[in-house]
Image 1 (spheres, one colour):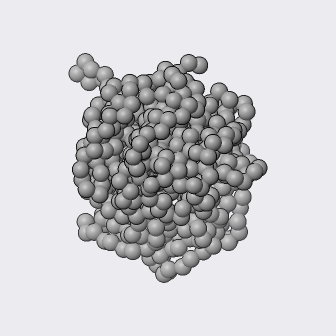
Image 2 (cartoon, rainbow, N blue to C red; image 1 turned 30 degrees about the horizontal axis):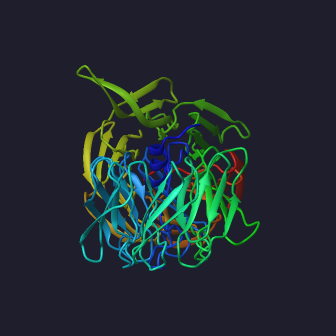
Image 3 (cartoon, one colour; image 1 turned 60 degrees about the horizontal axis):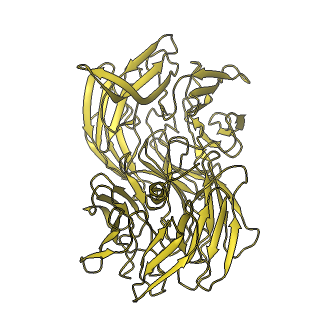
Length: 591
């Protein structure tokens, strides 16, 4: 395979494009990867523990999926499908911020971990984002490199002054990093045609060295702890890292499997202050990490594989939820009906990138297989892509509905108490409900950071519009019976909302699953608060009424073993069902 200079530049400065089932993007910056120039920030560290977190940006759903070093994980919707994810600590709190660069118009959208959402225009069409801390104030500066002219434009966060620096020629690849150890990022470029690195030191003077070949990916990072960026290239054809330290020592490191090319994702994964060599192999969705200075320490982590999605529902109409998974890469639904123990059915319905949206859309008390995806539509002699619901009804026949709302997320539920699931979307804080009996309604509740949590909290038979804000542990609910809004605190950061009727009083209870403790915290509307230890920190909560007694049962799906563990509220016994594939990963039902 031959890559042009422009292709190599795009691979480096546009961070890293990872094809993970639905074009998930992983993150790395070509600058001082291990730590920012100030030494206070680890690149890609979203929780401030000093270790790089595994992160993928999925353009098809504009979702950031992060797996933290302690094994917990979360998902956050932020950005648009054409945005490029960029790394940096833009608010100086020692944690990486979710940030995106829009190459079409030079817009930066930053979700600061302390200051909240920010937006700024910095750059023009064709510029490449090169964010680093160029002034040493502990905050990442907005910066772009113009490939056609070799000019850098930096907005210094300490003064607000624009710094314009010509450094490079057309075809050069920008690789900013702190090469002189003064705590400020230096302008640096890699010339693929000759392997030349040219550095303009912020402390004064210039340096250059020859290291690498035309198709290599250049990376700057501190591998020996001298606080200076070293010269590193990743050679994909050999699956090998070529390292030249500032001291002159040279070495190579092989990371990953020999039968598959990987993409470089360096970072400080063990928190020792040194950059670790790492690659992501998209065909397997596996990260391979080599801890610098620790021989034989390669760590293999599954994160990003196109995965089965747990979609429990009552598909056979026996009043009990069935274990079921949706396999997005082939559109198959694999069901284990509770009414026929040991049997498995497979239904082909869906396509790559579709989201499963099961529900009883025809009111026959059996869940229907449904998907939400983008399909070609026609209107006024024009064709265009639009969101659509495609439903295979359990009673027979199929239904296609185009409820067209841009950038929509499905939030299906029975909002009008007619026993049929209604098609519904959420776009940021706007909910669009196509009620099967009462018609279309629009409700406003929530924001970008909130997790959708519709359920019948007031017991009137109708689902209430509701959101959960993980950062505050706050539930906001618009009660369908009165139209009033209720705000309740229940949960902490990173808790997963799992509302359901756990006490059988006909009302959904506020509930969260705390993965770090493997504990469920239930605020039961009829029986009071309680907590239950069930599952492990890597399990996916999938509560539902599996035994048909009218009470939701605690249940988890374990991706590592493809096991469903169900704690019956009727008998207190735990049932284990094997369904799915090992290492299958979750897609949240609501986002």
